[in-house]
Amino acid sequence: MLLGLFIILYAISNIDAHKYEKMISAMGNVFGNHEKLIDLKAGLPKAGGGKDDLLRNKLTELIDKYHYNQSIRLEENERGITIHILDDILFGSGSANLTGGSLLVLNRLASIIKELPNDIRVEGHTDDVPINTAAFPSNWHLSVARALNTAYYLIHNEGLNPEKVSIVGYSEYKPMDSNSTAEGRAINRRVDIVIIKK
Image (cartoon, rainbow, N blue to C red; front, side):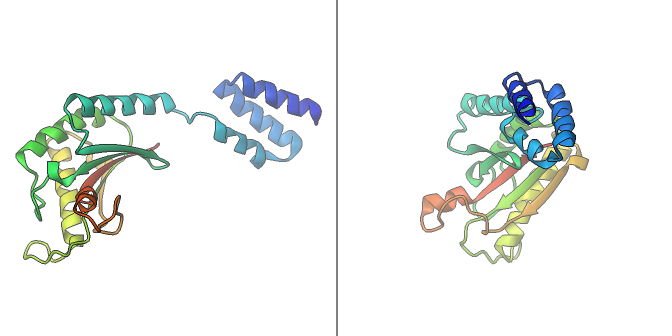
């Protein structure tokens, strides 16, 4: 048992991803505790982590270069990298039609993401102020329409692979901020482009 422990400690101090896979498989068979040995991988960088870093850096550089800091935010979690685009840069109030300026923003983002092998999910969000118009009887309709129009533009105008793109509308039910203030509601009205982690 001690010999096995020292082998594990030595391997972790000199990480080689390929050798590590072989080692945990062999050690799991020896000690009959394969699942716990696999759990040690939680401390290792995920495969492709370097590519994730490069992608995040490219997106950050784009946001800084074009001064999008107030309108575009990045978030990274277990799903992947999410690009939060606030609606003031994409749509007019109560509208799902992309504005002229939004096309340039999406063009610049697409130049980075369209070559990725990852699946892309476009998510529409609203604040909690009710809407009831002929075009949009509810915030559900508005959030789906905004996601759809954004995804459709990225596919048909920017060359994103339609097989990798999906859309979803969340209405007001996944806020990023409080809906009790105008500032919070402005943040909640957004389209998210989620680059799904492979």
